[in-house]
Length: 344
Image (cartoon, rainbow, N blue to C red; front, side):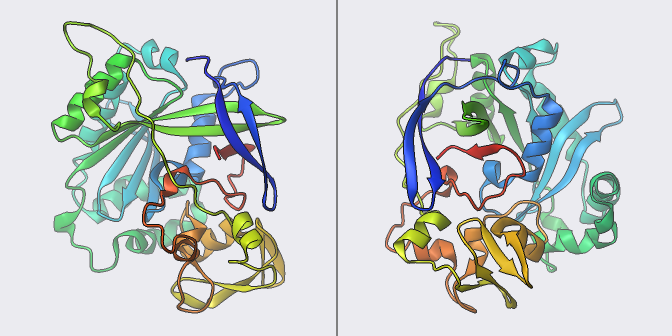
């Protein structure tokens, strides 16, 4: 990968940040030795870092087909589509296989196109996943799927298309070229670059959508020029206020009562930017909301309100700013169960 320098803003306390220039490393470098399985475990618990604040459900992990191939992660979205996620550590791992990275994912997507009904998904994929990773929820499998799709969801709309997401700390230009061509021809495929950056005794995780880019033609390798490095356009994004910033600005107050959207009886007391008090117990904002919504990954801002039936934290912090973009958001209340945090 490129030895570039990135500038990040690191939250070190309520309303306090510092600027630092840090050098990215790799997942197999001296400062960090992680396997694909460990990266997969982290991403499985933090899907919101990849897919934003949409209602999602992780329904499969290491799902094997009849030929023995195993898809890393399978996610169901609220449109009834299956998202096939394939993970590699870096370009070296991508090129270590005789089969191209993108072709491996396409083959798995073809496998999952045979899942035609919700019941089919439950019996063939989701219940086996729960038995391996979340046995306490096996009996709740159908209701958990209903929570994403809605009870009135029709099988006629289910899994009509499969979406593909490739994850790595670096991509070969030919992989990007192939994926850009696939997108231009109607295949919904994306490439997400995740880069670990050492900081003190932790690692920041820089997450960048490489494809689709601002100008997709920039990614296609032409016959005349052969391989070339993909270009990147500068992107300006509005930084959204975190819970720490909301406390500092007065939008949120320590000791205030906050509620789960749609569950007025489910409320907690704000302890600080990271914790709330619920039923006498101090827990993270993230754990409180995940338990209430029965989701593997959530954004607290879209599920927490300042008063019963009131506007969400997200609506409060984005008043008058229609250009806000949640994909670049960092928050100390987003408990990643890891020593990684997203880039500020």
